[in-house]
Length: 306
Image 1 (spheres, rainbow, N blue to C red):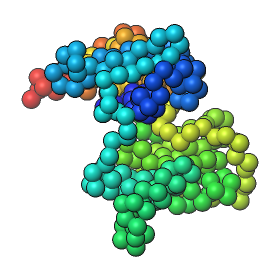
Image 2 (tube, helix red, strand yellow):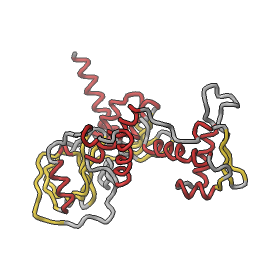
Image 3 (cartoon, rainbow, N blue to C red):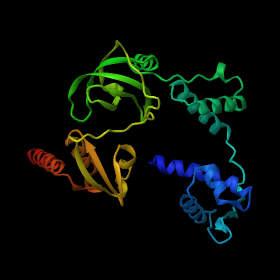
Image 4 (cartoon, rainbow, N blue to C red):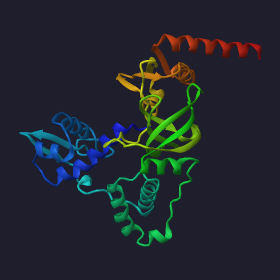
């Protein structure tokens, strides 16, 4: 699984290369300002490009990328001189994906404008011929309306890790889909902080008559976990086949394969470690270690009985 950081870096490289190739000797400052680079980031990306090329990978196939006297030069990369052309199926998939995001209320103005431009080229009559209809689970429409009108909502929520069910008053900021699930980003009055709730874990939801003023710049709609002082923390070393955990779960990346996993219940990281088996190692976290040992003993006892 490709991380968001890697995908963003690759996108920036693919955007930067045609610009530099069309302007031999362009200044480092101009490239940095146009694409949001620091000098070190730009040099790191050029060094990465320097190791790329066409199959064969001999001196005549590798890209030549360098910085000389504060000027950026990229040679032997004519195939990057203009953006790649999409095939009709690729363009249709891209258009349908963009329409899915905009129809779900997640499309920023730039995406909506891009969908219009792509529609005019790929399918001028797309409004009449292509409909993207995402089935929305219960509560999504009401939560989205409450976010738009600034109305607080009372929810009954069952936490995924602990299984505990609580009554909460929340101030909805946005409703979005990610990783195949729908989520609510909101200010939770119980926790007095932002929380991200899985919509399918909301048992009941009802708007209240209370209005609220949303923040001028709410956090971006994304899956994340906000640790508290009471949380259990575990330091885990991930093997190569378990690196997906750092992309899928909201964890703190400590580098060199180490992550810090925070959860309100020790069972969450303990069950994850049980699933990962030899592909991950618990480095620190006594509460998690105790529970993990208990799980392993119970599983071993079950097999012995069978």
